[in-house]
Amino acid sequence: MWMYDPAKKEFWLGRMAGHQIYVEETSWYSEGGEENYGGGFHRWSKRYKKLMLEGPHKADKLLIKVEPRKAFATKDYTWPVTCRVRSAPEPA
Image 1 (cartoon, one colour):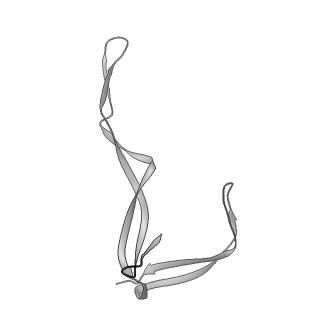
Image 2 (cartoon, rainbow, N blue to C red; image 1 turned 135 degrees about the vertical axis):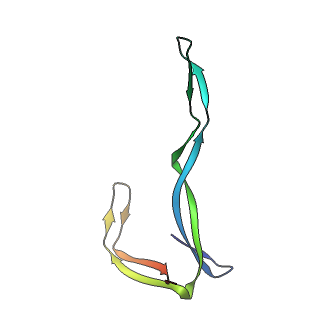
Image 3 (cartoon, rainbow, N blue to C red; image 1 turned 60 degrees about the horizontal axis):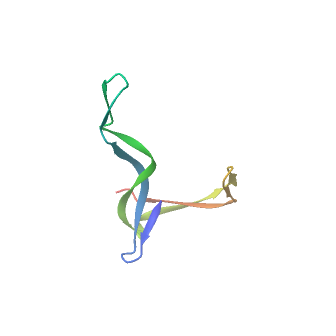
């Protein structure tokens, strides 16, 4: 997703990356009196994402492409027929 900084008139390319959560180490005793341990590791979050930004990019250095898009629907959303605008930084 592209984000615009109006103060500097620059664009930033953003993407949502995975985020890891630390699972605290814990211990407990079973019915037989044995001590058990769990946690102490990182796992990928199903809920949280980390915003990663690339840029800044000047508007005159972006390659912009307009493409037609067909209608699309899921059980929750409906997108009408329209145009999709894609942009990418000019290769260096």
